[in-house]
Length: 212
Image (cartoon, rainbow, N blue to C red; front, top):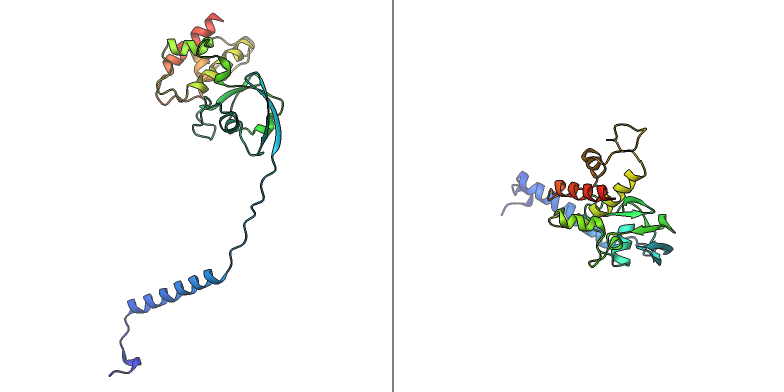
């Protein structure tokens, strides 16, 4: 019988033996080292009061709650859609104090006392807002996911033009911006329609803007 030191050992066996020893050491260390306790203290809630679609709402919210999550999860206003959640698609557009904004990018606690209008606050199924009716008439949607944000943005766009607020497409900053296709495309560029209904959306906004 060969002595232990006479048994041939190849490089593969030696490497496997080393890996096995290392793994055993790591497992033993994990079993003997206690994990640090997690801090599970709840976040203090903040009182937020807003007027949403004309109704005064008092809420207790985590300060990290966005306007989008406040609307959907706390007020059951699911018309405002969560698309990219990064402020890039415009599906979550609402009107706050007369100005449109991406509700996924702003915290509810930042808008204490503000007035928020969502697509539900513009009109009802029995009495549509003119912009909602125009979107239906001109088939300004297909899947409909971006439509609430498109409509809120379109309403705010026409108000911007009425106020004389210029855009990057405004040719003459000393005169009121025109209700032109170029102006509307520029102002609506933050609202993406993945179905590609842009031409119909433009027709709907143009009709409402011309009648205003």
